[in-house]
Image (cartoon, rainbow, N blue to C red; front, side, top):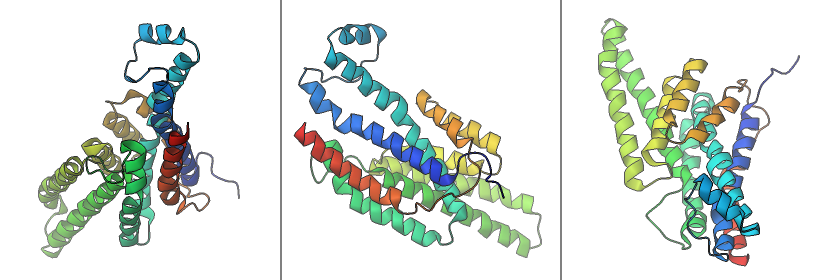
Length: 265
């Protein structure tokens, strides 16, 4: 039997890991190196500034590499994780364990995340991406529970299911808003924008073309992130090799390693 063409779930996961590593390497390791050359403002993307800084030699080209890693390649990771979260929710045999793993590694990752991005052990101003993904999972779980509950109620009453959606749609919207509000309140990575992305990918999960369009719309504010849907669109529906705990372990481990490297360069 021939393998189905396209990218498996494990291949997408590996790609997301690589893009995330590129992004975090630039974000954590590059700033102290660039600071040695008095380059401390990293938000200037104008072509004039790029040309001027490249003329300065090594430091200028390092700044350009930083921008490529952060603004282009690094932006491809999160949309893939959002897509895989939605896929994982539909495929997992135990949603409680799925949520439990996200919660556990959100806790484990918090200190490495704080050290890497804030330079201190405790910082409540910004939470790691596991918290965002956990809220996204709880949101789609809640939306599904709402739908199943009201459909069951209407079936029991022998009423038309179409009537149930007059209740389901606003109830789903309430769950959606609550999750987005929680993401902003907790100051999660990507915040409400991350929750919106998960919600749209879940809402259009049964139609691949519409899901890709919705996903691109969710990341309209971050143009380069849209290119991740080229890879997501190649997903073949297969799990691929088992990488269940690779992302969970890799995330806090690579943050801690990059933090230590940043202190040595």
